[in-house]
Image (cartoon, rainbow, N blue to C red; front, side, top):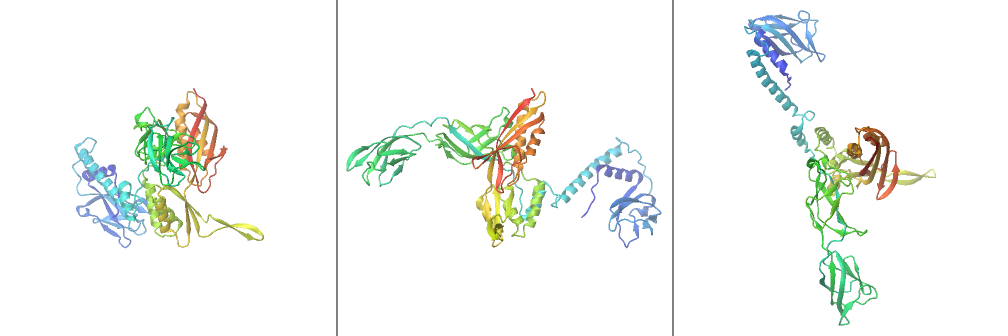
Length: 539
């Protein structure tokens, strides 16, 4: 049912006109086969037709009495040759009828106007409710919860806000405390190494056993050695008799556990600016190849949303201290936090869902994968990425292998992604599913400041701006150098940008510094590691 929403001034003006002048705005539908239209109040005597309006070629137009229409005996009649409203459109006739009303005082503050405005406000609210209900039934106009209900018909749900995820490094500057020596009995079965139960092992004190049926004390370095957490028997050394027990007395370090759910946070003097994170799985402190006692543990933001996205080095505190842990830090940026899906994005995804009902297309494959929780949009799909070489005219020519599709997906459960691919792909098409290779970026920004501005006034804004831009760069896109310059130059307090350098790290190998656009491979995605800001000028 179509209707026309009316504003508060229109409502009150119409009511006051009817009360004081007996003006009626009557709506009639123009039918091409109908010439005369009876007015509802015509029997009470029409004193004057104030105006007749209606759409002509879609434009609201006033009609002229005598040229376009005539009024007689309570009926309106259209004149041959005159203008007429659009077919099946609604035109309005405003007219005076009956005797004039004795009500004359409609000035602001009068009793009549006060009552009319109060009623008009309620009617306006009713129109607004009707308008909301009407729009809530269509995908292009519904918003909020109403849109959720509309798209639910297609089995589509709004994606909630996502939590930022990354790694936090827990560690100690010194080895963990030593435990008292402990003896352990081990059965010798001819093996070369035997792992001890209490780890990590610090040192072996003694190893005793039977050799040729007699008690024997084996020598460290000559008969055995400590290999990680194991007793390793050396070649051409004395060993216990086969099938006998040997006793190992050893010292071990205290085992330091980081339990799942451990809280870590950033530092800020303002409580509301502190970002809180928690570990998603447990871990044990170990000595790495450099001899440092530390371990990387997956963490996620406690609160969903982009507020959990932080740069490297921001995590420094443990609100819940872990025994024997001396420090915590994040050596890479923690990213992936997003707002709940907006109405516009949800609306477009639902429309794509309708188009994706026709399977075996790239769009349907892309749509199915992007619906999986945790998948970062957009997903990159390349057709026939594999080349094979053939000889044509005596020269080798590279041709693409048909029937091969490469899909690069960041985030999401790989098993669910593969299920979606197998359910959607066309028969005979091979789909390669890859994770993006992250290119770690260190961005150095040198700016000149306005008078009275310090580095601390602009540093955070520049860091956030660089991070915000790089988060918009999708898989395989180019990092535009000019965008980085625009971010720095657009920061309040920055007079000029003296230089920006981007250092890229691919697979742990530096690929050099650049002051130009950084082209990424088809399966590469940028990830900010740190931003360094230096300044001259200012205060």
